[in-house]
Length: 294
Image (cartoon, rainbow, N blue to C red; front, side, top):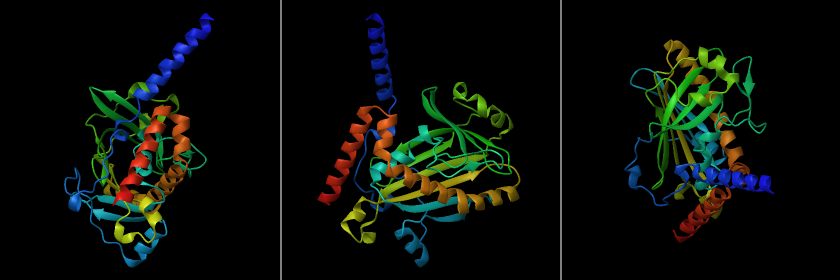
């Protein structure tokens, strides 16, 4: 009897902890639209798709571009229309705790010798922690033919109005969340280098009214990803890496995001507290009501 009581207390404590650790970016969502994208914390690249690219977008395929950065490096961009509502898309792309989720649902990526089926291509480790009052993300990126990259990122977001934006930028320290690093990736960490610059952003919004052909299109999402990255090393190596990312890694990421979104409620149920699942359902209902009213 005493043992059963202890187990009950531990179960209640674990449940309370799970609820407390629910990502803050999921708590308050605003469904209004920004006028001309005003008020964004980072500018959204304005790229007019070609006629062929519009056809790809409408068919659910991602389009990618490489833009020139001031320092001669490249900014990789991707846009795709997800077949589910913005609430689901937002939660999937900002679920940083599971970027290194391994599942046969995802394609394999990594080095030439070691590959993993991770949600975020090439992410061999992804830890989230709070240090000095700031939420930080430790990442280990393993890619073919170049040294691994280790990153300590600070996450920020604004979901007060569409487009919702999520940013991860270098935190200014070489490594964070160190106590949670897995032993099996320690060798990669020892060989890894820190990028000179790494800012990744997501912009999430409903499909524009001008592109909606059926009422169901109001439940699709316009997703834009921007990676302003200079991983260091020789510029020629970076050019090759940027082209590989635009041609392979970004479309792969889009496919993974769509696959994860299609099973999202079941995934939430398996990995988060019931209160998080209930909040997700409420957000989706509020978004649907907002769409109906407008």
